[in-house]
Length: 337
Image 1 (cartoon, rainbow, N blue to C red):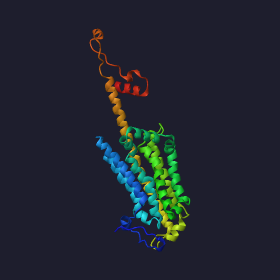
Image 2: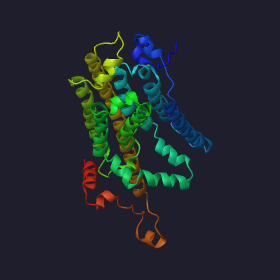
Image 3: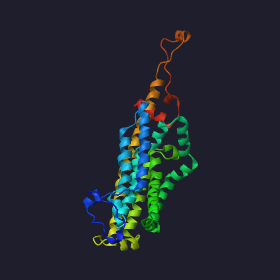
Image 4: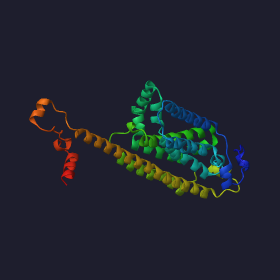
């Protein structure tokens, strides 16, 4: 049976939270639903436009965008987590980490920026490219800046009046949702899909190291929340905690542990996605090199006068015999062996 959020939380009208109620209780969040509808419609329009032109779009990317990206948005803002986030801390903590880490990862794996560039007319696609490679975007998505923004957002939410105020003010709660989603996307989307916004030195090995570093940084808020002696939004939760709720300190420890666990779980598929991209880039580079070698080893067409001076056409000397660099030297040694 589907449940709905109640307005008089202080009356303790919410039933005791169980696994079944967590999975079956839902509430409508109109701003979040509108955001999900807009993102899903735009993405679906782009995929449909490409298909009408006969251009393929990977179904795996669509599945990641819809199931992991939009799905995490729905679960965070309208599931049992949202129903109970005003009476228990740990559902709110799980909500925030879903919006900050899981949803951005799913949206980025869908590669919406490349879809937009391919689906839009040339003029509109050019405007998208200019915006995404502009100075503001480059500064915000600079790896160390975006990582610091994610960490600062999490710490600001929990260790300023931001979170406690958002529990009381509905529009600020919705703004906090959007803030968390945007902060997480600033790091994840460029690293996975929008290389043009990253510095030239941010190669795949560097990105893998940054993702590993980000996994460590993302664990910090969970550890701090779990071990912090002062209650987060303590006045609110002490007043609104139902009789069946665990001790407020224990509730906060559960929330911090959940944040830490989810952050570490998300880091693994994020790192794997970078490693897969790295392997694909290496294969593409090797294939391009093979094509270049095949072209340079093609016999040259010689004129009749040249043919009188030689019985067989000369071959073009390959680049590794004439160029002096590490790659050429390595190829020469391999051919001698």
